[in-house]
Length: 478
Image (cartoon, rainbow, N blue to C red; front, top):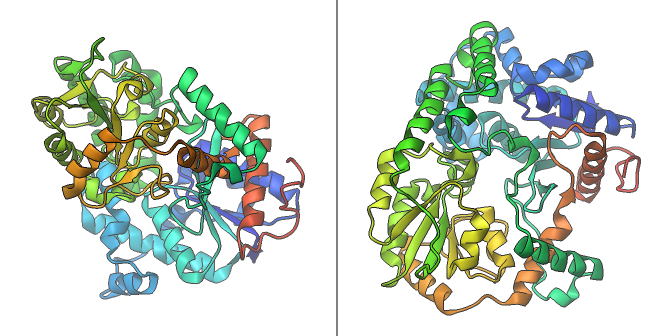
């Protein structure tokens, strides 16, 4: 069977509903669509599609696959150009706090087995999935690379209510035009409007798919019906559906929520606020402890406490370092780690209620691994030092560090210079040109129409994608 579009990587019921509605719009254009759900829950809204749905976990269970044969892991690594199978499941290991490597390796091998069988039996014009570090995302992406199948990752964009696509890569890449005057007039106008909007009336950029997670670790926000229902769904999948293949451990997930409450209470003694007459400081926003951005895109910065200590050592005398927990992971960082950082003489931990934009305004510079905070700081004309791979690194608007031993000189350069405003605008213009209006997993009709148009434009621009007919941006629903 030939499919113009294969949608992979779905793990939640709402993912299945969203992609089902998106697929209907492309089927109306004449495209054949198939689905590769990564969890049974995501396959439920797609059940009416019959053979077009290839649910990976249910296929693994149906086959009763044996443990990896001798040499099978090495063969997979060789065939797909993997340095190690371990790199493929590291994100899942740390995110779920399940360190049974034999189990994770078996899961990865089984995913390669059944996904390879799907692509043996079917021809795919294009594979689309949400950006992720989970085993299923990494396996499908590895197979597409090996077989030369056109591939798109999609993720929330750095602009409000937008999405951005990575074409045949796990990183968003685009051509930056440093000379701002060379951008089209409408792009220049949008860049000026974005900078004015960001600096005059800033707001926290929260993608639709993550809105339930952006909340403080208080009793009312953690111990609520939504959290209880989530734990019940995971327990049900573990007992009645996926059994021992369930990604999350109910016990460990419940423990994580409870520990976040305890840590949040204990950290109250160490939290600080912005002061009226603040001494010179650099701002370093912490990532989620097990975020894709560091585990996959910047693994050398995985131990953020070490990075913070290195920055602390690199600061000139009299300059402080202000750090802040990621809004999604308040209370997730080990208490002993944050307490040890708070005891460093030039480091302060900001209270979760302090807004990032308020911190950026007063900062002498912003130092980041690859957080979107770094991109926002450029709108304020702030010097930005980057430590890891990001979509705004390498275009002359930031100071890029490749070795932590270079931190001291990079910090001094940031505190004694200002970035070129035209390069910043050129970079933002490139981002504006690649971001599309629309949001992941928002089922509203207007959003579905916008997302359809965004995906159609990306499909038309992707070389080699056998997307069939009717995918031009001016087609139905654009």
